[in-house]
Length: 141
Image (cartoon, rainbow, N blue to C red):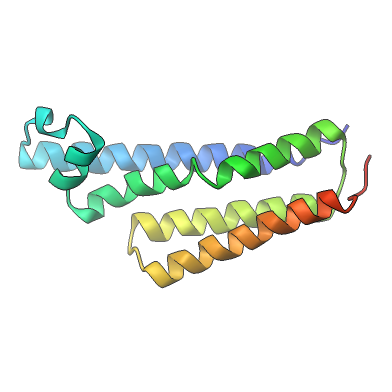
């Protein structure tokens, strides 16, 4: 059975961990520099209100990585378990991961919404394309 579809899924896991680390580096750096009382950050709402947007962007991106990408993980797992072997699906999966990485890069840095949305939208089209190919009988290995 071909498990190459799980490699892009693992790359998404790595991306999620990278964003998680970036979030904590930014948060802890800001909290330490400004000497904030951490009790003032006791809920997501309080944290968001107390920290500037540039610090909150990584946290918002991390939340994004637990939304639509969950469907990507399910599709990759299904492809692997069903024994579907398709170069086009693997290529689309890597394309999805690349687009999500670009989305994260923009979201955690310059946060240009139109650019970020473009990466998000195209990644969703890629994900829907993967589902369409699976539904319409991609080659079973």
